[in-house]
Image (cartoon, rainbow, N blue to C red; front, side, top):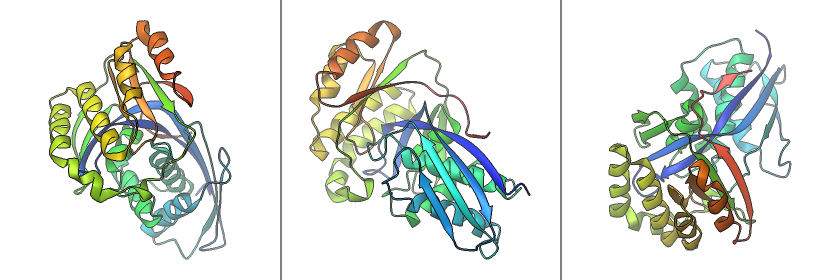
Length: 289
């Protein structure tokens, strides 16, 4: 047993938000979170630090390590010191929780000198997200897109991957990230579920491989239901984006653009208060470093 390990998981962006339907879809982007897990001889004692955002609550990373220890019946043998660092802003809808849980679960498993299959690692992170109360749906779609890369379409209620699609195009992903934060656990789920019949349509589009159409449709529907300004996405589309819409529960907006349209789409997004993050599509799996 090494007792210490570092792992990386990448970010993801919403295609279909699972809150209304219990089914969702997401795709991988090359933003990242790294996690270092050091085991200690203090059972049930977890010291955790989010170095890129030290004021944030560390419950998720603590619960993730605990879930891994419990999986191997070692929770009465070890505690852990955990650090994460990331270029994914927290509580903006950019899957910071999914990436963190994946990286921590992978690093903790490796630190124990154990192996688990990929899907079990993802599911331990999803369980921890429920334990830490940072999720409404379990975000299984986001967690899978973060872990596996590419496009992943899921049934979150059954924790089942329905379909995986490769990302063939060479496209750039731009995120408009407003100053405010929005925590998934605070979402008005009842209100968001009123749009279920419309989200069904977006989900079917995704299953047929029309992922960018699904992203735009989903984003506009959830913007309306959540009270976010749909004009940001519409302006990005008018500037030539292939797809644009609310990411997760917001407030960030995703815009997907071809190389020749990056400048015009970025200019459209810059008209609104906030920062612009640029990323590429991710096709790589989470891994131990």
